[in-house]
Amino acid sequence: MEFERVLRKILKEFRKGNIHYALIGGFALGALGIPRATFDLDFLVEAEELEALDKILRKLGYHLYFRTENVSHFRAHNPQWGSLDFIHAFRKISLRMLERAKERKIFNGKESIRILLPEDIIGLKVQAIANDPLRRIKELADIEALVDLYRERLDWQNLKEYFSLFEMEEEFRRLKTRIKDVK
Image (cartoon, rainbow, N blue to C red; front, side, top):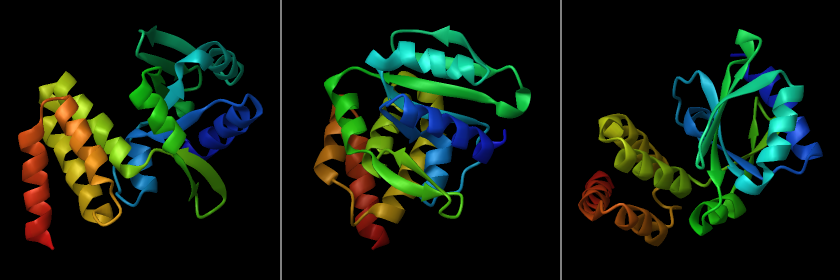
């Protein structure tokens, strides 16, 4: 995927269309300082803007190939443009994530993009584990990498709520203990 070229075009259209979005997933991890191989782009987007999102992506050469209440997946007609995945924000918790997202520089400072806070990305990873236990090892590795890098700046109360929401309090305690041991 031609990440820089694709993101520049998408972000330009998102700004013109006033789309409320935030980058999530592997590319977001890289932008936050945790290198990770990825082959697509993942976003959180306000569910009320799906119709506008569809128009933008059609204009850019993407087609919708899967949608549920919670997610949309798009593929490009040009394989070099890759695929785009969107989680729909319509619950209070995901809408708050979007509100808290921050602009960050990417591509050596040539472009800005909204990215979820590290603790909100962790929250999505906790949800991913709850939805698919087979993802546990990969998601926990990403969570630990984020915690190692951002431990002093994380909102630990927010993290505790995410782990509690998915009945993973023991995993939260293990993470907190691990961090104390690492310091």
